[in-house]
Length: 421
Image (cartoon, helix red, strand yellow):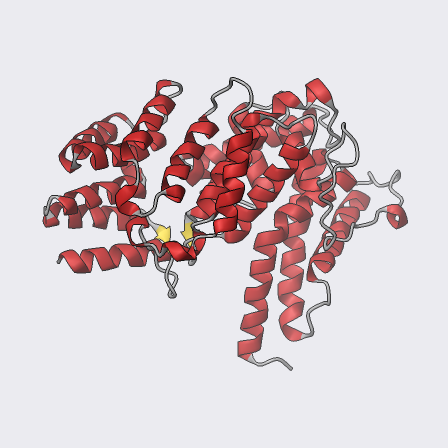
């Protein structure tokens, strides 16, 4: 009989496992049963978790927890199909669950993606589905993102995201969209949306919108792994894919230094650069060089260059902020983004001073729905503190705290307020 502490530990381990593997389970089962049954599959995966929560704390967990969860979820789908009298064509004995410990990284054919998760990404990014819905659906099914996390990525309401997901799933069910991915010209139009999925997946890992941890390394390195496969595939390889990987590597290299021993946020200016991963920086440089082929200058190229300025500088004092500002100006000359503008204004403050940054922040807050974004208020607080305007800085930090759902960021704000008051 397990003690209460052991039961709690098992429950926490199960929650961690499910959080990290739900997307892979959905992808595997979608290949087996068809992506049009996505609602049924998601329900089955959730049921598997409930079953595990009921059984595991009161007995020995299985030797292969991932396979156990997937097998239970598969059985739930088969039960549902039997109840719906749609299982006549299904030979239950022939429906096998792949060994999830075997990470198939090799590409076998020029027309085939070997990863179930990538197949699911490209299936969800079908041109018949609206572009934003493509990305939201894929984050939900493959990335295991919650609706609040997707809403944070889009700076949208949870109701809007729920409706977006419903429309996308309805299209999957009614449009005859299959998980199998064709080759060549049919695959390429989906690449941009697939890259956007990986970009948002990495961002959520790099700065988790909610929960106890500041970062989710699993999401960051899963995005890198999948991007590498896309870059190696003969149909989807492209300079902008290498730029995306370079961006990921430059950013991921700093993960170990972004939080201290207690898990609290450490600003770039205070990070211990000896903790930065030099191998990832080297890989980032290699992919950045590959991205120079051709004449396309994508947003990922510009963001990778910005990240390289941070990663390659000898210290915080030697960061080339003017070069970074020029990159942000070029980014914003294309499709304007309020989130990119917020980052641009930080560079403005470094080049032209905090007063100028606060002026532009005020304009940004008036014209866009940025006042509901905690990072907007954190940025205002930073520049108010730079000017010694502690009262305004404290007020901005308090507004940021009210909008923060991440424990590590919340503790960071508390420290800043305590220091100011």
